[in-house]
Image 1 (cartoon, rainbow, N blue to C red):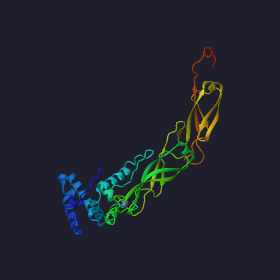
Image 2 (cartoon, protein in one colour):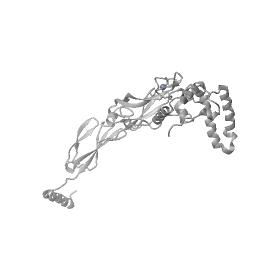
Image 3 (cartoon, rainbow, N blue to C red):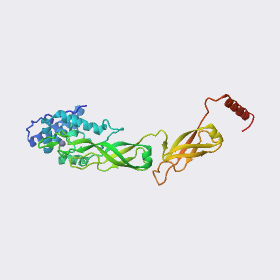
Image 4 (cartoon, rainbow, N blue to C red):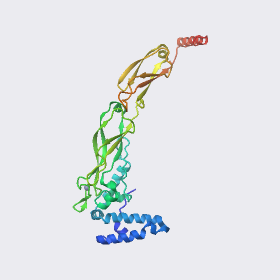
Amino acid sequence: MPLNYKNYYDVLGVPKTAAEKDIKSAYRRLARQWHPDANPDNQRAAEEKFKDIQEAYEVLGDAEKRRKYDALGTGDWQRAAQQAEQQRRYRTQGQAGAPGPQSFDFGGAASGFSDFFDAFFSGVGGKRHAQEHAQAGRGQDLETTVDVSLAEAHEGGKKSVSIQVEDLCARCKGTGLERGRICPVCHGTGRTLATKRFDVTIPRGVRAGQRIRLSGQGGSHTDGSRGDLYLIVNLVGDERFQRKGDDIYVDAQVSIYDLVLGGEVTVPTMSGEVTMTIPPGTQNQRLLRLSGKGMPRAQGSGNGDQYVRLIGMLPQNLNDREYSLFRELASLRKGGAR
Ligand SMILES: [Zn+2]
């Protein structure tokens, strides 16, 4: 949905040249008139109207916001709306074209007012605003996901991650204004989007859904403070390894001869290949344990185990001689041998 420009002067029914005290008295009169309690017959509509009036006064009743609003009205509204829309998408849906599923969640960001207000006036100046919305005094916390492979989770260590982050506009220092005009860089939003690289420390044995905090890399506030950026670990599936807690499961195909007569099987582990002995008379689907070859334990020290499931494979395309030997084996078995 495109961002709509709001005409706050119309909402309060005052001219653009109105003095501060006229704006204040217009607000008081309208607020009394449209208070939901005073309109029991059309409470819904009154609520909407009442909120509009509050929003308009929040901006026009604050010298700094009003200056910015006036500049916005004479600036390039198309560009400003575009920029604001881009940033809104960033906050609600994540960035387009980024590797991996990225979504952002701004905790408690909404002012309760319109998107227009949120885009240009939340976190801007005004003591009254800061008191009413205690959260406004700090940049917002951001969340996004980071893809981690099983090998990276096993080893831990640094990983370079590219993430789009919202920054305070360097040109206007987040005010959205430059010498009384709308800032040409951020188009009045006070913020810009930029892709940044982070060296993220992946903890050894990290689990899916675990949060890694990048302190002070979250959303920015006009006073320069920043929230935190949280990376939520998305463990990328591995074809060979299945993780259950701290343990790893692997399937290994072996011949039925190795199961019956005993033999060896070489299997991958998180730290290279390992050759295991198959004891004679091993049942199909049996699990063999490789002690300490699993993931680093989330709690305590050491590693979990790796379990190898032996999958017995029947021989294909038997020749006549093999068939007759199998028949002989079968008849021996029928004859009472166990
Ligand atoms: Zn700017």
